[in-house]
Length: 405
Image 1 (cartoon, rainbow, N blue to C red):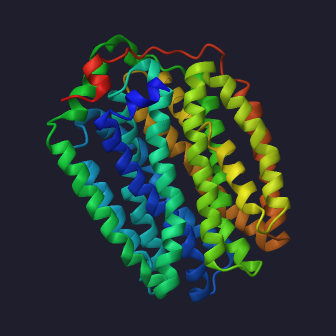
Image 2 (cartoon, helix red, strand yellow):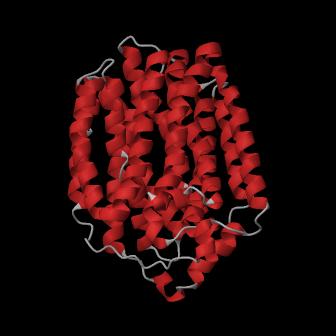
């Protein structure tokens, strides 16, 4: 717990956590908007999945590029700009006059989210010590999980009062967050660039050696896990709307699922630093399977508890896979973060419309239960991750780890 207390005093880490909170807040708002837009445009569940894919695919595919840019140039301007861009596009999405406009707004919102994620993750890694890496990345990731959890709740409040146009109420959140990030980064010239480059410079010979053997199964696990999680989060509102529940129920339910994930992410990082990444990863994936079956198999008010349990178990390995990727690409934390967060999660976005099509054919419960097959495959892939995954990146100085100027 002392490690956690030290990291919570790291001002640089908390700055990047704030940006992560904001962009994922917007990602959490969109699933609550989809049922309203589906009603307005008479969309099938497959069509809703395609709209969700527009956001996820754009966000995912651009992340390696922005990770490379983060490694090269830092984040002083790009970080707040990406938050503002995401805020504007989500605000516009609720005002969409056509399905095509909605897809365009979702895609452009994904661009802002995709720009921020690898940049924030690589920067958070650069300002923390190696022995604290899993815990530090879990704190950074929890910022996003909390934002993602609050998104459906705030969306339900906004849309419940004025309908889809309530998306404009989300705009001030992003503007305030961007101003705070800009103020913090502007007061620390070259914060990311200097610190990330310092880490890279300490091990120039290692930059060419990519540990493909641990990296590929990690990416595979990330793909499968995100397919399950994104499908569930996207279709919870639609499923419970079909069951006769209103936004006042499925909004908080979605929040609890994602909020449980935030708790699990933090616990997973702490446990991984203490007991090992691979062990915690395997255990969390194995326990997620029965939790998913319980959540989908017994719908209704009890889902408020079983959904939180599922979220906690499913996301407990989130920061672990991110650190594994960063260690497999020493000296390229931005690229590694973009790779695992971008290409890893794009499969989740592609999988959502497939699950939607299956739901149109056989019903939502059967479609969601079919996701258990993906979790079994994820466990099998995780067994291929070596027990002694490399930890080559050197620890930064004490001042760096504290986030001092």
